[in-house]
Image 1 (cartoon, rainbow over the protein chains, first blue to last red):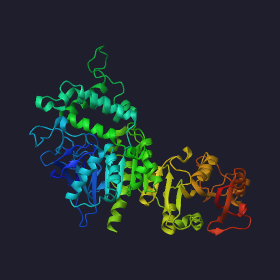
Image 2: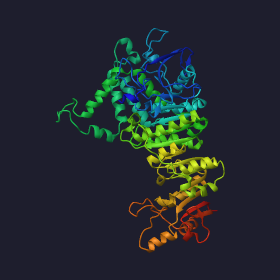
Image 3: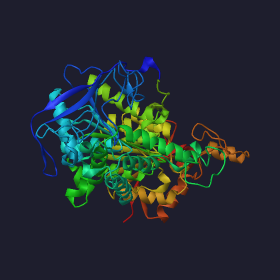
Image 4: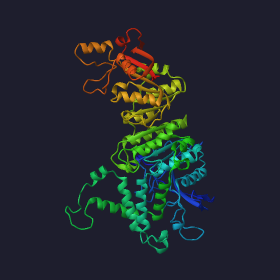
Length: 379
Length: 205
């Protein structure tokens, strides 16, 4: 990491919300906490704020590092910082852990103050719309009436899009990266297999595994392994692992032999050691339910009629989980509704994971777009 | 971490910009195909207040368009304009790109599906200097046609007469024509004395 480009030492903050939040499902959460980080300075008129929405396994630690954990660098540190495409010299950038998450915001692994027990299976199923409501309350708390931009990749991109629909007056620009206007059947199918792995783990205990002092590691690990395969491209996997064998020979058994097996299991183990199984279930359901056209007879043109923001839509050529075609499905209703929209299709070999990686063209697109947003703020 | 250098063409370098702008009323909606660095759209935005989008395939040009503050959709014109609905624009422009398109006929048809009117500008292969070069036994290389035969993107060069014949045979109605040599308008023997042509057209009745 180039230290001169880092925002440097950061620390997480907590916000408590005591007004009940009514979910799309009808469930009510009487109170909740969100953990978040901020980078850069909010200007006097509070017009330069950018909200970063995270994807399935993301969190509030977007950039910088912690004083006591210098190696714990934010997940989008390459993108967010002084002089970086999301430039903290110009913008006040907010990263938060979504409601239902497992990195400090109220979620299934939090203690329910009413019962003294962890929420577990009782935590409401959450939707992208619910997240936007909860994020808007954080914006209220920070005095931000309108975001200069809401930005996200993958599931984060869906949240950014939802902002423009739920609260069109409160977001001037939306950057939806490697996103989709809804999941395809194939995508929901992947999520269902991942959930099945967790739900059928004997340690899952219907979501209340905390009380049994166990973790459905096996299911979570399988879910992550499957997910990971779909985030990479065929070519990237071939380049990185090919048919490499760990010991250079076939052992004619079921132990780890191919490097890809070793890699996937390592990823699965790592993930299962810190991620909450219930959060994983919630996140995948939020993905499945996201469908702005749902209330408009499947008509995305009507769904986006209320949007007022300007849009930058970005996809990656080898992303087959959220393919360029899905991003173009976002662009079409924006054209129909005559919104300002630009669309870049980035040539990349890294599949869905591309949105997290530093690539000159991708970063130049984001930088160029946000530099204009910053110029408009100062003019 | 600084950005690479991105291009911006000035209107002064492109006399067809002013000719195109002259045909476009204030506040019109415009789709610019093969919009390059977005300079024409920017020029039309600034001089005519158009609401516009560009379509471009080149990565560098996409960033230039964004730098120029114009909407741009990264797409290959040759695969059609399926992102755009019927009659969704007042004008669809193809500026200095016609000659570089492979499926030229299909593209003109798509232009008139998406737009009420089409505008094209292209280098006139019938310009006397080009004819002279060919007469002397060489492919023309000039300011308007700056490429060598072996690395040119121009696969469908034509003369004014060729284009007009094409329009007649494909039921495309030419509404206006502006022929230029440099910045000068040409009315006498345009197919011989004009180096650049701009046409405005619509679907024939």
